[in-house]
Length: 248
Length: 248
DNA sequence: GATTCGTCTATTGTATACAATGGACGGACG
DNA sequence: CGTCCGTCCATTGTATACAATAGACGAATC
Image (cartoon, rainbow over the protein chains, first blue to last red):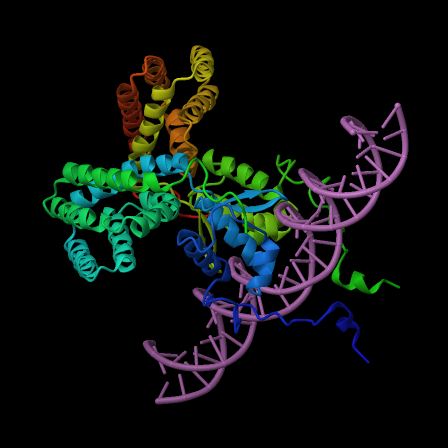
């Protein structure tokens, strides 16, 4: 005879974060909600989940064998980063990409990335300069090897390092809130316009030079110009107002 | 004899959002997490919860007779707005106010509020102009009546209306993420330096004039200047690096 | 006395069950 | 045939129970 509790399925002892063997490359180690948010964020940024896709908490929770609590929390984090749009009792939608959204994101980035470069130049600590130079070298190597994906990753690291060098925690929080959304467009750019690398590398070198020389205003200007460049490069590749509105 | 379930206390039928009679002026109507976040945010902004105060999910959940789920979610929202700092298994701390934090917040605001004013001036829709003029009149009335609190509220409304007029959803999201933290300092300013009103009102009038005249650059400049003014006015009233580090 | 180690406690992290609600769908009615 | 209304379902919102862990506190050891 079965025990009473079997009537409602296996009791599924709470495993918490330990020993979860989840699907499709998602290997949680620490806090599930954050890990899941990071994982889904990269899926969205690299277009492995298409813009406009509809998701539900239940879907994800079943797919990765988690309870709804961390899944729900993960979606709130993604929403705060602008990667998904929540609508009460109607599911969750991966934020569509559009020319309008691109313009909004880049417009804000020009101000905030510019400010970060400015403040980094004012401070210009030796450790930051060394770190930035190091990353630039890796970017150069990736460019030489023609590895757009590696270049992209190092480029992101370079940007993040500048944020850190600004020493402004509030600014970093804001940039984090827009940076993930921006990454979607930046990824499209490097995927579709790999030759962007050739313009970007010298530009980044000049940013570092300006920071090293404490020329804050110039660091800001170059940063703004680079963003405008990549903006212009991406624009032709965003189709219409709304890409991929049909969910899978 | 008592029923078995009585051994672990009253079953407390799930009331969801209906009929909750909570403590201390908190009257939830819609989604509990959001209502609670709004309520706690205002408590923090108006210093009814002191900077540096330590809280726990359990505390709040007991105080307002809610389960931990919405409480937890509310705290995540507050953390995203920079009003509290979460530390795993060590409780939640109301973000302290400090000169450094003030500088970070105002530095970012100059860029973002400036951009909002700029874009509002580029668009300058009739409805927005009318709305702004209307709010300015209320500000004038509050100033005439010497009502600093009312002036503060209208001033916040004015700022928010400009954000809206920019028509930039991403910018609004970012401003929302920093605005609440900024409000704490803005409130301190109007509380401690009520004469700030006399400078602020003409400044805001000039912003509206610039927006009406489509003079985007000027709108941005005036906005930046006003923020610098209030920054300078607040600074002397923030004591040292960290105010009120002792919890109640 | 200082140090190390275990245990205990406070607090968050996760799982699950139940409530509420917006929208879809179909039937009754004109 | 179109419109309105009720029912049902998918989905999120909330409540609660249980697991894990960081830090405190004390006892044993040297």
